[in-house]
Length: 305
Image (cartoon, rainbow, N blue to C red; front, top):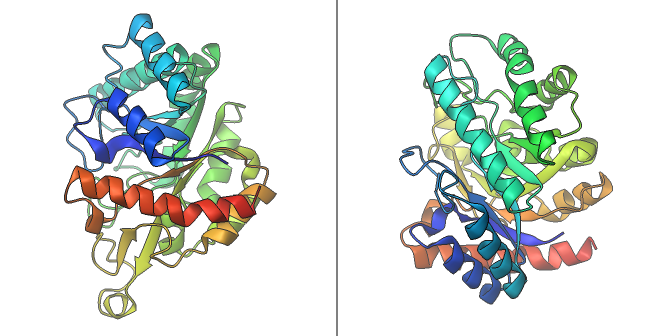
């Protein structure tokens, strides 16, 4: 298991500078944010503008990674691939295909995205829609020897307050998605932080879905029991009774989670996704937070070798 991080918090650093810094800080791999430059959603980033990538620049990036012994393990672009607005859906999928093209150019085997949601339809119908929308995407990726993994972030309130905005949030939904999308290059990017506040055991999920986990995030969740009493579980606003935090500062047993990943057969990267608002005030603070997360996780990873 190589330790890395998602690059989105490091804007406006160039990808080249991020590669150099990652190596100097002791990381082994990076997960590169590939949102369109004009994206405005929270926690996105454009460390690689896939619309301008060509074979020449891809070769230079690959050479720099080799020089500094850093892997690019995943390209990430998470948006609503089931958007009700057909033009928006087409635009999102079109960009996702460009990310897949970029992964092929960079010899990166994995792309991470969201399923998303048509907010006017129940989850069961969204699963049916995903079964129609995703096969051409997965075929496009397979032709380029790329796997597509979906993150399990529920995105509550993405469309409406209290509504799950990304339907791939639970084992029940994963099972149904794998039934309609049995392709070998379709899997999960497992983030334990979301499972924890939903009451889903991250270690059990890691163990039971290891055969379909293509990537794994390292992020924790702190639950404030006093706020939970006042607000209740239906108040899903970030910063209320729950908050994202650095690994080790919340309620997740990362030793158990990493061990369960190993038991389930996963031996891929562990990517720090820094969304802890106590470490987002500046780029320097983001870097410090990532290094703290790595130092916490490194001995736990070593125990599971």
